[in-house]
Length: 355
Image (cartoon, rainbow, N blue to C red; front, side, top):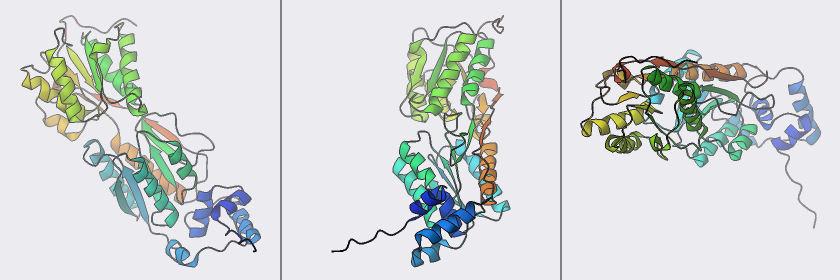
């Protein structure tokens, strides 16, 4: 019996033309433009291999949808509120519509969104994830539209010449360095840290910033003052705050790895009759809108959520308009915002340590 011939796929075309499958998919679907002889090489590969697209699928894919997608893990986290608002405004200005996917940080949900890029349903994707896997990177290579990614930290990913995605992030190492050194300058020597699991680069970089500031202040790291929770929500902050409140040798200040965690800490300290900042000073991270109306108003670190969102849209639009330059990576710098929750000095003569 004669063996049935295998259908030619876009993977065969990409291999023959020496380009990514994403570039082939965009050419076939008429999304974006390619520079130089890229389109000609793809066209010749299609002719040589006698590639025939599936007609019904082609009918669905052939039209540009004018839709950009934001996929992010935590729909209820106020950190994202400003970012989503800015992205929506920028997308509308560019004449596109916006699709939002709440992935809950689940790899399979994120891979489903990446599969949609091959179906021509969206024209560009901004994916936020705290722990990228090999499956993610394989999916980026075969994506059918431009992709921008972020781990909301500096991250070891992105910015390499052969990357098939752009990256935008924030220097969270510096964010925690700034908040911790601010407390050290106020004379605090026992400073607790409450964050998420250090297996995630977004929290590992924060913890490293905290440790670096302690070193700068000539203070030793006390493991009893480190709370690296598997969950990084308000309840995690509350649990850590209860432990801190009951300590015999209680820290005089706390650095929280997010404002949501800090809110949980505030609740716990108040329940145990402790005053902020008189008994325990506190600095959060994210500078969400709620910080200004808390009692007392929460010191925090602004994480440039709006700027990150705007940059992601600019990256996607540039790629859709034919930008084929090497992969881009932009890292924003945070800003410390001092409010009442950290204004006390642990000693009247408090001063910054000598460097």
